[in-house]
Length: 129
Image: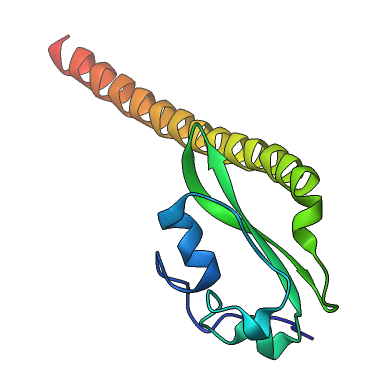
């Protein structure tokens, strides 16, 4: 059973998740129903009462957002130092995974180019001799 599903991605500046991309800061909402920054309904429909939205950053580049939600109204911001520390570590791990995957793809592509070029050189040598 899905608890939460966004109908479409948040655009930059839209709702609480999209605002962090423009403002480059975390957002904490103790009461989603009363928060003017929460303009979309997915979180409300899911039954979340409180929410923290923290940017995933790597070398000052925001590449995503981490959401911490509660079904009970609570002041999540009081735990902001811990949540932002956790998010920082997750950011590094995710970005390292992305970079590792890109490196593997690059390596595979380079290996295929070397193989193709070697075949071309061997064919040229055979044709020459």
